[in-house]
Image (cartoon, rainbow, N blue to C red):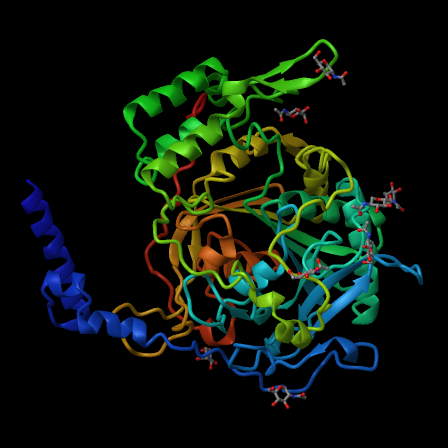
Length: 564
Ligand SMILES: *[C@@H]1O[C@H](CO)[C@@H](O)[C@H](O)[C@H]1NC(C)=O
Ligand SMILES: *[C@@H]1O[C@H](CO)[C@@H](O)[C@H](O)[C@H]1NC(C)=O
Ligand SMILES: *[C@@H]1O[C@H](CO)[C@@H](O)[C@H](O)[C@H]1NC(C)=O
Ligand SMILES: *[C@@H]1O[C@H](CO)[C@@H](O)[C@H](O)[C@H]1NC(C)=O
Ligand SMILES: *[C@@H]1O[C@H](CO)[C@@H](O)[C@H](O)[C@H]1NC(C)=O
Ligand SMILES: *[C@@H]1O[C@H](CO)[C@@H](O)[C@H](O)[C@H]1NC(C)=O
Ligand SMILES: *[C@@H]1O[C@H](CO)[C@@H](O)[C@H](O)[C@H]1NC(C)=O
Ligand SMILES: *[C@@H]1O[C@H](CO)[C@@H](O)[C@H](O)[C@H]1NC(C)=O
């Protein structure tokens, strides 16, 4: 039986390879790194991204020169990253303002789009983590990802589509100096808007369309900042065009973790093979805590109706205090602990990972951004010790006590912009997809509750010339990324949900071509993430796309109750 299966696999492999190469390699040679196989990887080299024909500095003037970064002067980066500006701006107009946010702004390198009056803000989460993580390991002009030896140009950098600024916030995060005075998300948003006015004034972007991309805890930041922006009615500074959130926390945290544990481990048994007794325990806890019934009732399309105020698994005390029942509040932790037994390098952000853990240039004793030469090159304060994440960004003993934005801020941004994308990676364990689906089904926007039909449309990432088994050049050869039908998408009333199957928590890092497509949709270059329109870059525009109908999306969306 086993041998037969192996034979048929070899057979298929051979046929496919023969069709491409007119040469059939024995299986063993492939498994052991046969030359023609590894040659492909050696040939990756540096990606050939189109050079800027405009070497001039569009934003350089007497007001911005103190922020200018020498694109050829970044330590370890052996290529010109182009025009950019970095430094700190205060969070208000007060002349003695001591609190600042640090930014790094890259004008678009796309000649066709350089006159478009639009800018994208990128925010990482935490709370307390630096957005330079995103710049260097997700969607920035150069990337130095874990397990790689040096920075390379990023063919999927968002600045190849439009102007992008990576901002470290709230105050005290990364290079952003000052005192943590924000007590909640409303304060964070007001401080951000104060900074943003100064930024718009500095770079003369009055009236420009502003888009926000945010990740993880950015599921709080993005909607709160966006909602504060639209509520100012001030299109000179806060002309919000849309919001894109990757793997965000936006809803009740019980709902986004413990309640959906059982369907998550069932769906991902291949990567989290928990033994029978653990699976039984998960099942029993889910029953006892009311998670099973809740999922059956509320993970349905159309939604069952507004859910009660409190999630299952909590007790409401006579004085109104909401207390989590022990075994209910710790189900997520139990599954995590068990997964680490099976796989000691189980990655909470990307479940297929395994040992060894790879070198990460941002978590070394001296992380890249904490080097004095790097700080000098990017106008960062030498006196600040840069770390990926800091504690205590909220001036409150209990941390952030803000209500989840799914109640008001997120729907407000959807209703005002009709352009919000919630992107998700199916391989994310820290914020599983099902929690976002449950949250959406209890959110009211556009006058209705939730999605009326279950997501099933294909999420299509355009083909860009990738040729497996070939040494011929193609776009993004240095950093090829998955394309074709990459997941499942759905759109209703200004809200798009798009799930990439082979993506972890940090979407643009794990699936960069997918996120390039999300950005094209966000800024209105394409109409939908489900059609076959090629990428809009001039050099990718003529690439022939698949001829056949796309069929359904490749991520199975769990639907547990009525109407499934
Ligand atoms: C930028 O840095 C490079 C490398 O250190 C140096 O050769 C060049 O002169 C610098 N350019 C400017 C304008 O300072
Ligand atoms: C407040 O900010 C100033 C300037 O960054 C800093 O010197 C001081 O230590 C901060 N105080 C606190 C309590 O963080
Ligand atoms: C908290 O805010 C107060 C002012 O509201 C300030 O005096 C104090 O330094 C802040 N704490 C920290 C840790 O920054
Ligand atoms: C913004 O406009 C809305 C609708 O016209 C109005 O209700 C609101 O008060 C305005 N807000 C501000 C800050 O002007
Ligand atoms: C469901 O939505 C309603 C209406 O916004 C809200 O009051 C309730 O707290 C939500 N339930 C949960 C568990 O998030
Ligand atoms: C409510 O009651 C619980 C249990 O008696 C107690 O621990 C808690 O401090 C009370 N909370 C408030 C806000 O009074
Ligand atoms: C930065 O780190 C150095 C070395 O560990 C330490 O001496 C210094 O006090 C730190 N500076 C700040 C501002 O925390
Ligand atoms: C793409 O096709 C158009 C129309 O056929 C043609 O004018 C253009 O030169 C082509 N561009 C590239 C990069 O091949």
